[in-house]
Length: 349
Image (cartoon, rainbow, N blue to C red; front, side, top):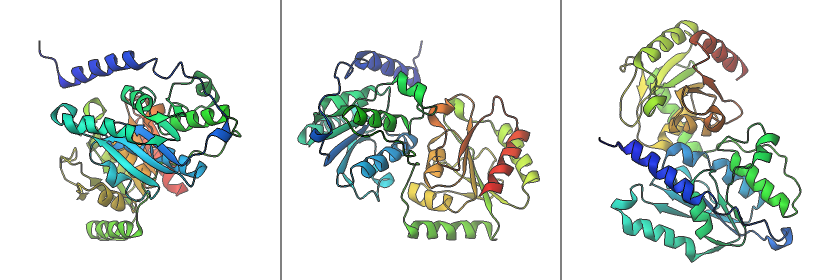
């Protein structure tokens, strides 16, 4: 019987979660706010996926807002973090674990060793349920550590506590309140890519060259991983209804890195392997529609209205997050109702 890579990863995650489930739980919050002078912060998210890294941008904005004189180190995986966090001037160091640890064992061990080279005033695990996040939080040198336990009291108190862009912020605020800080009730920051004006203007030119008109544009992204990916038939039906209901709009497709299309390249399309070039392009569209994936979060991080399509993954954890975005469970919402939702979003813009 052949075991797939997906099965191996599931087994690995299950084992690691069992081994680390009690890490940090026995450590009560000690000290008070007078003891916490924050100049150096470590945020840990050892994951290489685009969406999972974008999801920590609200936490970065929150920490900078609370401690504007501090510098932040990131502990991540893969090579895309420098591009995502390019314009975050208060990030001091990005420690990058290799995407494939066993193929780059020395680099992997070096990354973990770098955690010990600095002492931090505050360490935050940004992902509840991440075993490597909990271990890196434990391994780092600091008196003050937010391990990211799932907090049932906070889950009852905040209806959006489970969202992965917000969960770590609620945990941080709870930790600070236990140190004696005043309760923080401000709105949680949106996902934020921090694009340069030159990137936005370049994207505007690329969009104009593609559509050759001045009409507003709806952009589709028809790819996703595994069971999250909708079929070609689904996208063809959806596009036909979209075209009939919104004939006054350009309808285009953003292609994935694999350069494939569920619409068989039959509508105007844009391709790039550069996430900042993609983001500058997306910043200029009127509405973005995609299944749950990293590019959905990339669009949301530019601030544009984004509709995330969900059928298998958890909306309460991964829905696109900014003030203009929303998710749709396609198991319970047909395409006619989606057209009504799109009308509402476009009318509000």
